[in-house]
Image (cartoon, rainbow, N blue to C red; front, side, top):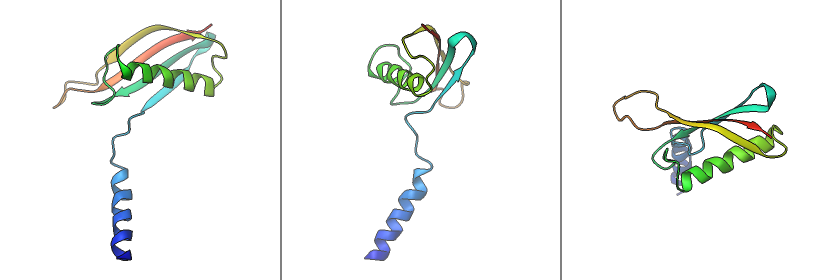
Length: 103
């Protein structure tokens, strides 16, 4: 019984590295208090502007800006665009790229 439990845990931990992460992002800080924030989309975190996925992405952006101490006050998003890496076999997914500045 213990051997089965240990095997199950090892199997699950091996599979965890192949799991699709929901939060895949990067924050690049520029000069003059500017930033570029990129977030990967997937079937859960769709690229649309309205809805829960966009609210979550903007919450992540605020958290990351605060954690990096880049914008102690407020910030403004100057542009938002969807970047699709290529048509590929399934042609879905890509990155939402936000560019903005701190106030």
